[in-house]
Amino acid sequence: MRLRPPTPDEMKALADSLHLTMTADELEEYRTLVTENLAAYAAVDAMVEPKPEVKYPRTPGRRPEPGENPHNAWYMKTDIRGKDTGILAGRRVALKDTICVAGVPMGAGTAVMDGFVPDVDATVVTRILDAGGTIAGKAVTEGFSFGGAGHNSATGPVRNPRDPSRSSGGSSNGSAALVAAREVDMAIGGDQGGSVRLPASWCGVCGMKPTRGVVPYTGAIPMDPTLDHLGPMANSAREVALLLEAVAGPDGLDPRQSDFTPDAYSETLTGTVEGLRIGVLEEGFAYEGISQPDVDQAVRDAAQHFATLGAVVEPVSVPAHRDGQAILVALAIEGAYATLVLGNGMGHGWSGFYNSHLLEYFSRAMPRRANDLSPSAKSFLFLGGHIHNSYHGKYYAKAQNLRRSFTEAYDEVFRQVDLLLLPATPMKATELPPDDCGPVESVHRSFEMFVGTGGQFNITGMPAITVPCAVSEGLPVGLALAGRGFEDGRVLNAAHAFEESTDWTKRSPS
Image 1 (cartoon, rainbow, N blue to C red):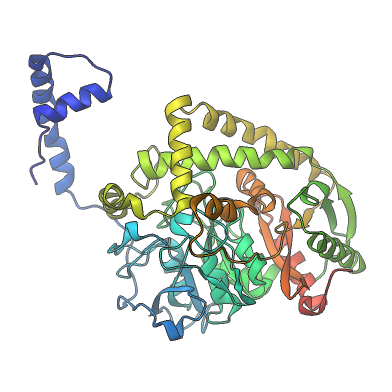
Image 2: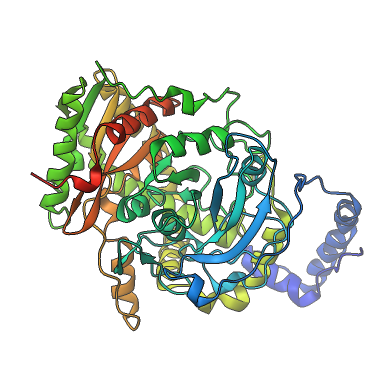
């Protein structure tokens, strides 16, 4: 393929964007130099690009009919079969629609991606199929993962199976709803600031953000590489452990991963917490004007239940915990802007697998379809663009530097305790906003809960899980447990012990 050289007008526009002042003759000389160097790109174009193997046959799937999509949680239905045997044999798994499945349309919750069909499977897809699971389809997500109230998808709001008038949470809203409705056995969600754990809490299922790097992110749409996680969701901690066991471990394509051997997580579930030191994180409770007293009380009751199981339960304090929200905003806003706008949906400067097909499609679609972005996505990009243009990365850089001291604050408390316990979210599932609400109301409703939804653990990379612990006013209440990095099995075992020793559907705040 012969690459097109820039026109004189394009050279002038490039010079202006680079703050260069040149005569027409100078620009023509540089245009000659640019044209000469296009030969290298033509050579690269002719080379065969290595891509992950697509191992299992499939059809493109189909869009569900309204009657078979009661909560509006399905984007595509598929029936992709893997091996006949394995730890996931017989289990149907849904995938957040930011995860590539070769040959199956992916919308990422936004009309911007209409028509995109991936040509590769994400690593988690291959591993699920290798473990005997069936990919049952793609679950609706908030558009490009911007939002937490379940109403920011181009296909409309995802309704909470516990109460269809309520939000399913977000951004992995379809994944949580399908698990809660038992339309699938398991799901994989994406979590940049609580987006697995929030919808899991509101829908009354178990959802986990593993330690950063335990699950390869290869083949999923990124937001910020330092915050991105994929995590399992199911109706029990045991099923979450099985799914995590199937998908965990280095894939050689994701530079966020270290060289480690994942645990057999399902075998860590002893159900015993005798002697486990659990710290009730005081900064996780009582957010003024946000926390609901019944949620806080239900979680404190759950902490006392752990004490009856033999755990040592005590209050602990991490004053920096509340600072985490501001750090998360600085990282997520400008990180997303750099990845999605400046980096054409993939970003630059790392040694992992680049989804070139996705990158090219996204970069062509965004200028044409930007008006189709949700209000929450537009607000993210406006703020990210303003901060980037006005302050040139200063606050993103400072937030990344603060990450280290912020993480050390948790490391210090983990010298006293083994796990932290706090509410998964400060409130129960909220009512869906009206369809005709304006941008301000829509965006406020999208992020009102995130101040207490565990985004701090995306910054630190620690494992964190949500497990339902009670019902109040007919709605689930979620308990969060967080642990030291790579102690995912300990976090899972504590959640499993809670589930095995009590029936959350019959618990209410004292």
